[in-house]
Structures are given as C-alpha cells and as structure tokens.
Amino acid sequence: MVLHVETREVVLDVVARDRRDLPITDLAANEFYVYEIPERGARIARRVLYLRTIDPERKDQEEGATSGFHVSSGAVCALDSAVHYQIAIPASSQPGYHTVLVKTTRPHVYLTFRQRYYVGLTRENATPKDLKKLVTPEALKEAACYHPLTPPTLAITAKVLDVGGGRATRYAAVIKPESLSQIGINGAVPHVQLDFGMCIFDADGEVADYLHSTVDHQMNNAEIARLQNHGFVSLLDAPGKEPPVLARLAVLDRNTGNLGIVDVSRPLPIAAQTGHAKKKLPLIGDIRAFGSVTPSENTFCGDVYELPIGTAFISDFLRVLDPVGSIYTSTLDVPNQNITRMGGIPGITHSSVWFGVDYYGKFYVTRPGVYFFDLQSDDGSHLEIDNRLLINSDGQHPVTERTAATMLAAGWHSIHVPYFQGPPVALALVLRIQPPGESIRPFNLNEFVPPATKP
Image 1 (spheres, one colour):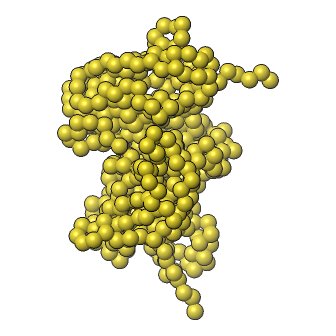
Image 2: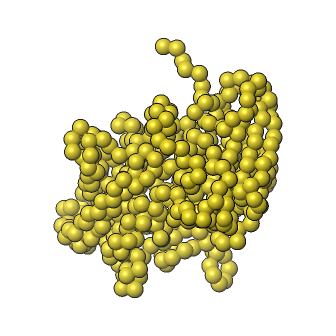
C-alpha cells in the first residue's frame, strides 16, 4: 500500500526594520503571526511552518558559480540588499490571489512584505476557458522576453552543461520536485505536456533571439520515481559559439497554465563594461538608459514596477506591488527628454509611463570627507545613503534639481534611489556626485571600488 501525501507551502519574504530604519536580524519564528485575509469574513491565522534568515552577504551561490554563471528568478534587488526572513505557511487550496498580513509581537518593529500570493490551477480545476487565456504562444514569449501575465507558480532552476567552443550552449532546466504535482506528476502515470521558451539577450539588454521547444511525453512509473529526487529535467540549446550574456528560460504547462521562469546570466566584469561602453553609442535620449536586464559587476540593481495610473508619490514598492523584473546600470543618467514615441525598457516592460524603478547599490570611498550630491528627476525620487534620507524630491513634477551634502568615512556605503515616472510627456533621472576637492560629475559606481590589492 502506498500513501501519497502532498503538501503545498508559500514562502513569504519579510524585511524587518526598527524606528531608525535599520535591519533587525534576531527575530524568532514564535515572534511572527501570519494571517490570510479573505474577501469576506474574519482573518484566518496561518501556521508558520518554518523561518529562515537570509543574509545577502553570505547567500549560497553554488549553482553556476564554477562556470561564472548566475541563476536567479524574478526581481532580486530589494531582497538582495538587506537581511530578511523567509516565512513558510501552508498555501491555500483555492487558485488565484490571496491576501496576507504578517505581524510581530516585538514592539517598534516595522515589517515590509508583499501582501498577496498566487496559487496556480490544477488539472482538476483548470477549465478550457482558463487554458485558452493562459496557454498561448504569445503568453510564453511574453514571459520569456518581458514578464509573465500571471505570476510564476512552478519552482524551477537551471544550470549550464556545455559552454562555448561548439555550436551551442546547453542548459538543463529543472522543475523542482516540490512543483511536480503542479504539472500533473502526483503518483499516477501522467502525460506531461510542456512548452519551453528561451529569450536570449545581448550585452545591451536587447533581445537577440527567441527559441521555442515542446515536451510531450507519457511517463512510466520508473521515471516518476526518479523525479522525486532530481525533478523534471529538460535540455535546451542556445546556438552560437559564445554563451549568451543572459538567457531567460520559461516553461508553461499546457494542462494547467502554470508557469516557471529562471534567468541564467554571465555578468560582465567592470573591465568588459568599460570597453563595451566605449564601443556603443550613448543611450541618452533612450529609455534604455534606465538600465539593462543583463547583470554587470558594481552596478545599481533596480527592481521595476508597473504602477497604477494616477500614482502621485513614491510608495513602499516591495510592500504594495509585485516587481516585473530587474535592471542594472553603473550610472543614473537619464536627462530630461520627451517620451512621446518611446517604447518601454527592453526585457522588462512595454510602457514608458507609470512605472517605477527601485535602485539599490554599494560604493567604496577611498577619500573620507564631505561629498556633495545632486539629484534631478521627473517625476518623484529619493536619495538615501547608509539608510539615511538625504534628498526628497517626491511627487509628480517637471524636472526638479535638489542637492545635499554628507560626511562619508572610508569604506563601503549603501545607496538607495527609488524613482517613479508618472504621466507623459517627459521623464528624467540624473544623479551626480562631487567628491572632496574634485569637480561634480555623473555618479558612476565603477569609479567607487576598493583599491586594487598588490599581488
């Protein structure tokens, strides 16, 4: 007799800060309470299955590290910039969006978290009307080359098997064991039908190619048994002698519409960034100057949000919205310009209005002293250094310039620049810096790195 027990959980990312906006890192599981808020009726207490503390400075980067590739899923900047907690609770059995509330018993602690999670359909409750909307070639390509129309519900990862030198780079895309039931592998002998999309981006973040493949396979019991340890593995090839700077892999289950996305990137070192910048045309006058989907060393990392029409102020982006992707740039240098005929940020969004970018970064100061900052924006923006607000230029307004000065010690410092673009027809975001005894210039993170160590 075989008893098959299926459990589903949702993991909530929670940032905890004190009244000075400094991170709190010693909360225990019994200090958290999680509630689900139904559309009608009283809130429902959810049991905390486990709690993990995630320190970005010590996070495990074993996957792909040996080959120099990084594997990530979704927008990563806000959570990669701060110590935070992962709280697992039982997921609802009902498909769709679910609202949650996270509280702590410790006084004077402020929590930031996404207020809803999404549960995908199952083979039992997916209707032909649902599948007609979710399972389309357009939906798969949109997920791979921009962002998904519905939140991903499949846990997938990827790794590089063969790199360069031949005719293609081979990737192994893996649907993790905890997501097997969501593609119908739940103890029976299933017929697996999956569509894979792969979008390949160049160093500028432009789409270089889009590839599509399918898996249509009737599985036997022996195959199912192996999947419980290793997950469902599919091999995908990206043509070309050089590995792509970024390949975004998307998998869509035809029977439920459940989707999984993973990025496999080859971050550009600072030297390569500098050489590439000399060769390419400047992006001034182009919305691409906000950043590229292709990661690079020592850059601002910005989570991108599509905002409700009418947004008037910078919000706590992470708390109230789901990011649609992340971009990277060494400078914030988008001068005032008309956007009437512009498209969106390649690989992220089609829109050039009503979007926000929440930038995070680190920079190294070798010469201590008073540093002068100049921030120009249309519409709202903030400048925070070491968790302290220096410039507040929030609200809808034409390009506005604000300045501030602060004493910086030698060593590492954090920087946070949330920005939002509201109505047409113009936008701007420029950050400049004036170190002690030097002239003012665009703030380029590549110029603020630790001194080279002597061999």
